[in-house]
Image (cartoon, rainbow, N blue to C red):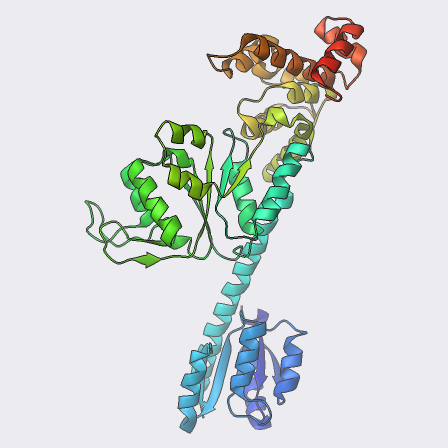
Length: 459
């Protein structure tokens, strides 16, 4: 809508200023007309302006100098240059310096209005893009990673140190631990935050499709390639490419990825021309890449290229103290998205959530919270409202055992299980040792012995 657009006109000829101001105001624009370029530049530093229309030839400060100052300090503002008919060469030169358009004097009203309209549309697109970027930064910034545990604070510190650099990052951790959220936090905390963040799940596509998805293809390069298509590497140019499940790449694709990381160049499928890109790669895996390298299933040179900065994410059971905060976060999210009244988990139900093993990690916790919020009719969610696998001790035990490897040291494993059960009992007992001992069916003195044995000071 034109009334939302603010046009700044700069011209030392007051007659032209008056004509332009009247013409644009009649079209619904907000107009500021100034005949002194220096005053106009000062005005720009204090006001919201969508489009600048400036004469080329003015005393003291020329239109070209105005253009250069605007492009330097307010690059999102389109600049229209007005010039006398005999000075078109200087206007064309101004286009090389970033002018949006030029208009020759004398000009027709329709010509001017069309050019201003196009410029305001560009300004509106820039404004919407900036708002989108701010929204994405707010949604995926480092501050959106919930938790205050030592484990998650370590992750946040690594993200903040790694983000400003160009270094390739490898994020490791079990499924559901939030690897993509961390990758986005790296991007939106980096100098590349205004450029694209492109995500690819390497396990979701078969190798042939994935190659085309990553590198693009030329028309006719294979059956069904009816047009040229740019791949994710090109789409991410200037920004960040997130490669999830990187361990699933075939040996052929590993070679191609290695070349891109080394040379920042690649070819589309079926093409011969080299395409150069400026990207940062962030990769993620839920597998042990070092072990895959030893087995010959993953290239060692690619592993070292990817593993410049490694950020291991803790499983949810390793950061139990964050569970109440995560539950509150997901409850707030579900309440807002479904426009529903707020609910709460009872203390006992929250203790059950905190003591559960969470094989599906944060993703599983979010699903459980959403399910309870939607299905439980009352305002308080109690233990009986929780899914069976969480409130049923046998189911919990089975889910925990299923996570264990077939080959293990029995004595060491039993000690780890005993320590985990003691921590869970303490959590459910609100750290009251007598109550925790009752849950475990042991004496308080035996519990204290176990606490000392396993070095458990909290929960």
